[in-house]
Image 1 (cartoon, rainbow over the protein chains, first blue to last red):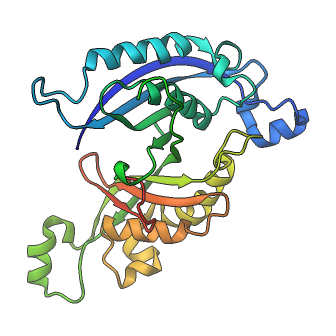
Image 2 (image 1 turned 90 degrees about the vertical axis):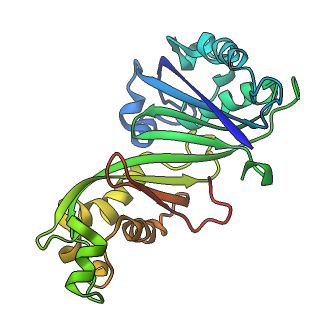
Length: 140
Length: 148
């Protein structure tokens, strides 16, 4: 098995607020992430695809196709957007690193044309990130 | 398969913390000559220090109410109490009891940090990864089939 990783960066704003909780509870649970007008991050996303290199092309997958997929599914959807208001997949969810990573995984996983999505890592900052791993033996 | 339902992944939250500490690699079980040969300048008598980066990986269900595997404030305060307060700006050999008998290599530091965080009630500890410098890093896990 060979893995191929591509990295992209996007900038987005968000706010952590659960409307089913009181303002006081929101402030207690989310701290400054509950600040009324939101805040933003430079997110870094690493996408790792696993597979066997094609004997003719020597490639696990065509990196241009992966680049286009990431542009279409992630950049156009999330870059320079407010994640609470402008990304339908996150509607009704707190746009935490966990939830954003899961949305990205679900967007990408069925659309990898060759190989399989092995792992993604979404960095909200250099000191906070979430990994999504493919479950099961094939993930190793 | 294109267009099918996505396969649900396993989610792991990673958080990085920073520790500055000194240590000396020196084993009482070895002669001075053997220590010098094995550990080189890491065995210099008065020790030296590193800026360690301690990466803590935890897994669990994402709480729909908070969107989180573990509340970061809870994780941060637990790590602060169990790891940062006792280890940051300390001499590992002198100030951390376990390293009186165990050489404070970063392998052993990974195990010690893991042991100190194993009881975190908010999520399951997956692994501890420590960068001793930008060039050397170490990982420890007790999780079967642990991530990576």
